Length: 238
Image (tube, rainbow, N blue to C red; front, side, top):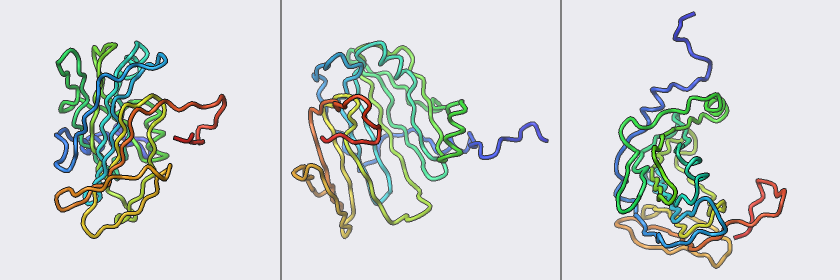
């Protein structure tokens, strides 16, 4: 047997990393403002200032942007290894920013070649079960009080139902969130349907060049309050 033989279903590391690039966001992306004055609540380790998810139907792309303030050493330790899971056989990733804002300066970690694949058995297990691998970027010298901003775009290349799109989305309730934004950008003639809960949470529909953007926004969301032993698949009401 050749020495370079790999285990069955083991991800091709070089091929997976070829699906990762470093560049600015696409022109269709809107960068939303957020407030840095949101106070820490109930001793939480993280204060999430912005959670933004934008979909572009024509390119089958999704832009994500998350801004968080690290409130204690637990947050620093947990976020010093930035991770992102994706499916290299059906997705590609554009990394825009993994950067720290501190005292008016910015420290960028999303540089060419910065991302590596997680070297653990859990990565192999995930690939075998779901086709996913995990990118890893080490964030050196991050500190309590830093603002950590992460933004990236995932391009989907679906093998089935490539002309169909569906998504279930709710604001993450693990920490309080200052601003939550969700939008879908579609071309003229496309007529997406949606349902919001509660029903009075309706989107704003606006022209965006030749396209239209359907956008939902919420502000000042508290952390989910769950009773002890609540099943993980039970979604609390917002």
